[in-house]
Length: 238
Picture 1 (cartoon, rainbow, N blue to C red):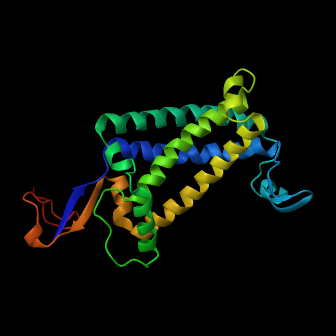
Picture 2: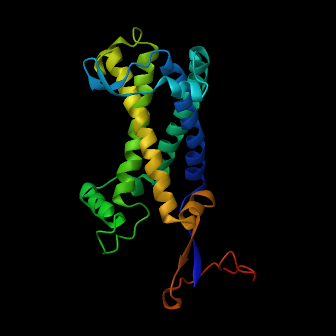
């Protein structure tokens, strides 16, 4: 039998879906800014193995010479990003959602088991929890990365006025490199996150849109007050 179970509260879903386009646009506008001084590469001395990013990349996406426009968009979106992040953290603390999100003492060991399970090397089922250990580590890391992006971004914008913070982060050049590395981290997180959502299927995606998940349960283990399958033609009864 199919039953609907509430999984994600409305507030969590709103914070999630607001953050997605805001962060994507911040990365886009950040590329406009980075184009003005795209110094980062992988290599040594005068030898370059990989450059972030080649000239053809900027030309293909029509990015050249938009420093002022990129800064304007970046700073406006920064306020939305910061406010959304603060509200999210505040909500998890007040509601108690943090208990399901913050990794425990054995999280890294359990995360290794999750990876083995996803690779098909572990056959035993994972513990039944709202978020597994790998998700807890990733979601907590993203929150810390957001704080890091705000701090490093502030240093890049006002290195002299925030001299104490500039020094704490290793100087202006280090702060800029840290800001860039954090951006790469967001992109990698997004790619893995989307791949995991696709792997989990529509039911998992629906839970972040509608807040509920459809679960198959044997009649003997059915809850006292079930909700009928939403795709059924008969009226829903609680």
